[in-house]
Length: 464
Ligand SMILES: Cc1cc2nc3c(=O)[nH]c(=O)nc-3n(C[C@H](O)[C@H](O)[C@H](O)COP(=O)(O)O)c2cc1C
Ligand code: SF4
Ligand code: SF4
Image 1: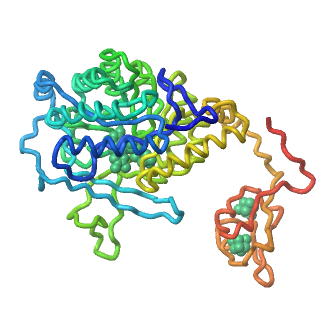
Image 2: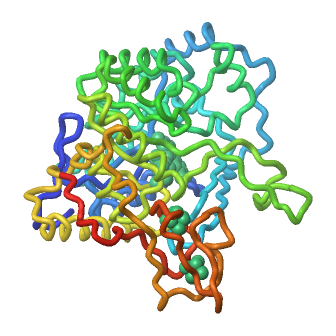
């Protein structure tokens, strides 16, 4: 549990969370276990390690379908004529790291799970396991750490989502996050046809539901009407701007208290260019559309968080996607998120990211003079302006070349700018009539020798 100090508690979906950091849902464990008990022991311990590191809540995935509802699935879903193809019954998860350059800059983290077939049978088969997990977590975790259930359901059959929501509410979870964002169904035969024909295979469809405002509304409304605990929706980065606003509006109209933005994206791993374009995946004979997360997701995450906070008031926001440094948590919160949910960052850095996040937040609140962390939620929204309304100091800025730092590599000259040129000795000069002070050339310089400055005689701006 977080120790005493600055107030990191936040309000979210009508509940109070001791702090905003939680690990984004990670559905199934990656190893083998020999019994339900072993599964529960190992996995509840993994969750408790997050809590011991300081996580303010737990998110656990679950699905459950009753036999009555199973009959509805058979009636309403596309028949799958051939039995599910599955080369192996064994768990075969595989992950592929495509590194970036920075220490924690994994550009893409690709994931293919053991043949991913979340059907009604999965929910039934795991019925007890979910119950035992919830029971174990409730015994082990402190009371003030909420347990959020990341809910799966089958296709567009709202009743299947309601079954799970009711059961998990009975079992005592504090909040439901409907998972309408998972990219994994995109790797299965039949799902895309289902999406375009609006007739689905009898499986969990993830983002194919979350990218359809009708189903975001219907599934959310059915779940909200069926339970008393707060309900929210986890969306997909695939929807993007501006349709993410439509999805958030649908969730809000259906009674959701929050949206989570977002799940991982759909990926296609880069081919091995030195091996005839075969997959880079080790020990796999093909490359499916799969899940991909990692640092690159931070850009769409901020944009979606900012857009929903601005255009869909009344919804709380949990941010996820490429948040791999404590500073990222604060940035996402200032744009409008109340919770932050690193997932790939935890796989990359371990629970140390939670510990670093908590100590950074405490120091930050104190040093920046805030009374509590809650105060920072959305404070950057006031600076989001329409382009026409910006004062960009046009004509008043110019590039400055730091001769001490410049190594005369010519990268900035051998480029797209018309204002920079080379003089004797390989030194760089700027034509002040041509330079618009845009800062584009700073991208080329790896020595920090280029900086946009105010032109001579121009005084510091007073924007606010
Ligand atoms: C291995 C793995 C498993 C995941 N399983 C789930 C899941 O079961 N349910 C879910 O809603 N999101 C799941 N996610 C998505 C994450 O919770 C998170 O929303 C997403 O990865 C974006 O955050 P990140 O860039 O920090 O990873 C999973 C992500 C990874 C990498
Ligand atoms: S600031 Fe813009 S215009 Fe000026 S030198 Fe750099 S890239 Fe060229
Ligand atoms: S890129 Fe930077 S170091 Fe290279 S010539 Fe330009 S200013 Fe100098």
